[in-house]
Image 1: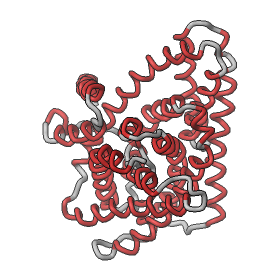
Image 2 (image 1 turned 180 degrees about the vertical axis):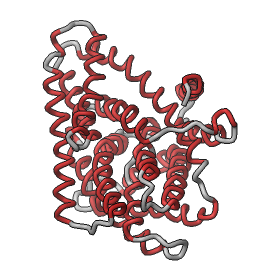
Image 3 (image 1 turned 30 degrees about the horizontal axis):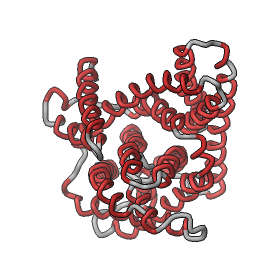
Amino acid sequence: MSSHQIILLVFIGYIVFAIDKKKEAFPVPVVLLLLGISFSFIPYFSDLKITKEIIFDWFLPAVLFVSAYQFPISDFKKYFKVITVLGTFGLIGMFLLLGVSLYGISGFFTQLSFLECLLLAIILMPTDPVSVVPILKKSSKSSKVADVVEGESMLNDGTSLVLFTVVLGMLVTGESFSFINFVSEFFLVSLGGIGIGVIFGWFVLKGLHLTSHSQYKVMVSITLAYGSFYIAEHFHFSGVLASVASGIIFSWKLGQSEEETELRRSLDGFWEVIDPTILSILFIVIGIQATQHLSLAYWEFILLIFVLTLLVRFIVLKVIFKPISYFTLNEISLITWSGLKGTMSIVFILSLKANSVGINDLLISLSFGVVVLSLVIQSVFIYPLSNKLKS
């Protein structure tokens, strides 16, 4: 990806985001995605590629940190139990149910092994509500649904990454599934990432009060976002959860400062430029690369998988919320529809390409197809659906 191509993509992205500021319910990511698909037919952009390393090492820490830092601590405390259950046990339940369902129906379309079905299921589990949360907050009377959807996405990225790593490892190496090893690795990687994010965040933020210059405090936030991520990854823990944990600690520490309003203004001034810049490049390039792997030969199977992801998500949410009667049926339906696929799913797909040994190319094609369908259909219809179902 050349420098002039990057500048052009960022410029195009800024135009789209500028339109978003003036239009209600304007789905920015899907517009960027469709632009990317159209650009794939232009020779100037056709060879433009993005790797798993670029997304995972450069883009992801910033996106995760911003979402965690900007998520209100009061809302995190209020919905802590709900967010935690959805981002861990809820996601595992969806993953298993979808994997078994895919294995049951795949024989009507193609031949996929059980492990391949599980791998496809976990690719489609993490949510990326960047395009729907602002719409939900505008259209609903209460921000409860938007807060839960946003909070869930912060945790399920880390959970899904651990699951993906385990399942991909078994598929590539031919190892058999061990429940005890799976559970122990899951908790070790997850808790280790959270622990490093909290500890690193705590020590770095101890020095926050040593300077009154806001630009240095912005630099501290950059150090936190990337430092916690890379340290956790170095020790084979979850860098995703480390960045999220450090972002939450950072937000909590700011809340204790007498200069919180001024500090947040400086931080927002920086991160609210970085975030759309990253998203502009990311979603346009996703559109360009997705076009190379989309297959019309399996469009019926792709559509069915997409429907299954929604159905499975709705069933698991209904089961989780039924004992506590915390959400109405309309709110559960909104939370279901708001579970778009996005950045983390693309990281997984690109990881498949990088670990091509023993990987069925059809998995990549099916995954890209469902992600594109999810981004387009769910983004476009979230506003009318939220208006219709709002309590």
